Length: 126
Image (tube, rainbow, N blue to C red):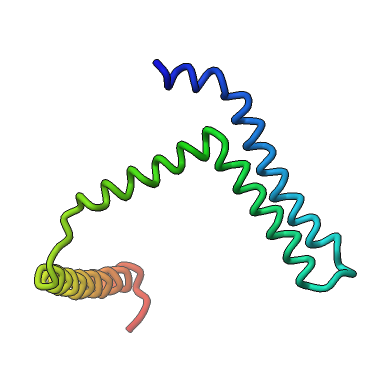
């Protein structure tokens, strides 16, 4: 219920914050190219300032909070992942390499057979 109220109540404000963040990034890029007469560090600072302000505005929006919550949830899920041992990883990698060799040989022989059939049917070649 609370989530639905937040979605409808502040979606316009969140959209405005998102648009403002995009405008700030674009303003930083425009400032970088507009300040060609200035030293390089001033140009870079103007662009970095636009990006930093955009990140701050985005972080205060609902989209930014949702992204942060997603990041936290992802870290929790990452801890639940079953990671294989070194021995299991080496065995599976070996199986994959063996399969690649077998598949390569199969497709090489298939290519030779099809090339031979094409030469036989068209009468070209030796």
